Image 1 (cartoon, helix red, strand yellow):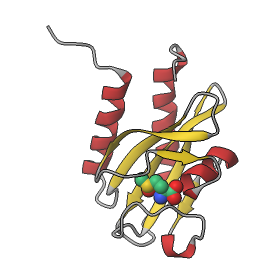
Image 2 (image 1 turned 180 degrees about the horizontal axis):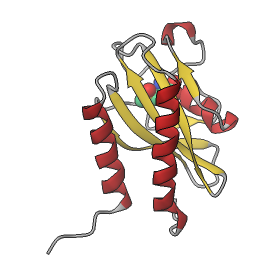
Image 3 (image 1 turned 120 degrees about the horizontal axis):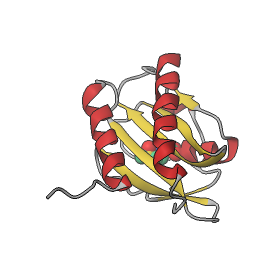
Image 4 (image 1 turned 45 degrees about the vertical axis):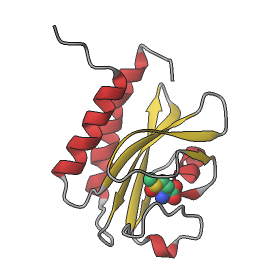
Length: 143
Ligand code: SME
């Protein structure tokens, strides 16, 4: 008998699917707000392991999105001062917040080894992905 996949399992599968399907998605992961604390915790991801498992609100691209509630597209990470480098191969990044019942509970974070690959299509697509994922949290507010 097969075990029902947990939300963690599903998120991990989504990360792997996105990374394997889109050539310039080199690292795909989720960060989630740590309860009521002003910090993000690394969730499921696909790609190289990262040291940045805890990110304070306001720090780096991810921490800024936790505060702004807005998409952040970085065509060239070298042009950002408030940036946390995870790997020397990363050239660009996109972060899209994940809203559940209007509340920013985390984000999807994608790193690319390609310069300036992200378009508005990525933003719309990742917003859609996050809307679908929000349903995994709707009836289960344990995050
Ligand atoms: N670059 C991110 C940190 C997370 S790693 O990309 C996985 C940032 O500046 O917030």
